[in-house]
Length: 528
Image 1: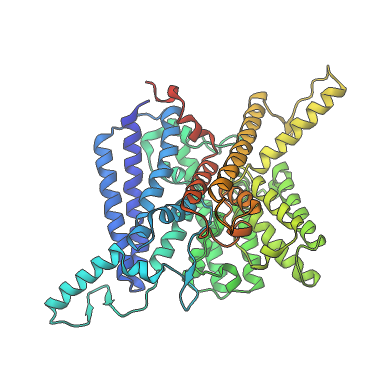
Image 2: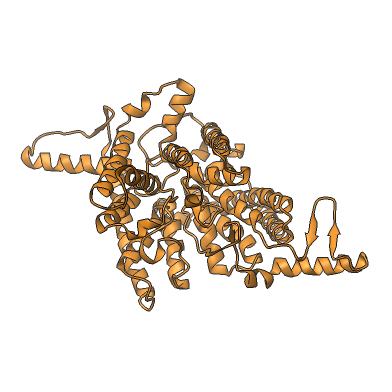
């Protein structure tokens, strides 16, 4: 293990992360939010400074698979810790800040925010914000400048008007919140290896694709550029469509950031319910499915003009079948009230939202749906979206291979001497891939049940929490969905601090595909 090489790359990642914090800082300045500018600016400086110090300790070198696993695991943790600083500086407590930021970078979309302003946008509790470090520093600056300027109550600077009596808004922080999901969508690591040419071919170890398909190009950097081009192109198209549908530019950007990334944060406390617009919901359904579909299929459409690649792909076909079947089950088994078209609208949107692990909702009534609907929703959470996409969960491809493996084993009981290969699109799948898929699926379920048990213990004194809340909380966090059922249907504010830490762990290990985190505990990984 070349620790100094790991430190060099992690340090560079922090420098880049800190630099990106400038963007929401500019948004805060545009909306005249001095506390937001202070919180994001201070966070940016701390993150960049820490990154530069770590890089001074590290050294450049080739990354092997051992270093890659450590980089992947610690990059997400460091991004969460430093990405939480703006929330902390604006008055949110440390655990809630870590929860909100981990939910962002893992594209989960679960939240602990509960308050909104008169316009329906999320805000931090006014008392907490008034007592925050950022507000204290701003007031100190105002008083200092006021003394210089003969006590003017309002002070103009070239780019910012500071008004101590202005309504507290958090547009800059909410933009950062959505921006973390944009970064997490294609994974922070994939973003950063695209601009690290010194990694070369060794960097392929960072691009840990969980399918048997081959990479698009021989080099990770080229693949990353192609994927990010497709990804950001979809974001731009969706932003324009939402803008044309009547949403403000700010809302269009934030919503597009969290749709293609299948993440689900909304700047509005009511989410998509606030718009109550069928056209907007149709746009979101299309792009949620796009985000949860293997990006290699998008590449084949855009670069090779092959539209039928989607229909030839067995994973995509099964994925669409699952979405349609789940919608039908909820509609037919009295899961939703209203006429047939209304039922299809509500059930269809929610199924796609959960099945893509995005987490948007166009109704709050889903908390009162039938037990059948609840079971279907939890199963969709666990299965998740397609491999090679931004969605979470076990993945449809793995479930397809597990089904094929189970069928083969039953056939071998009838024909013990038969040689029955498992194929995908006519290509045989190796036994090593099958074993890896089975191992992952089993470990995923073991961690799911263990964390559910742990959450029921920590929330045993919580009267709002029941078994449905515990199961859905772990499922939604591990699969990067966001909203759950029961006590966590809308937010995680009612969960105890220890329960939130379990949820943070679930978000982390689920998004990390479990194995890189488990490898950290193997002594062999750290040996030279």
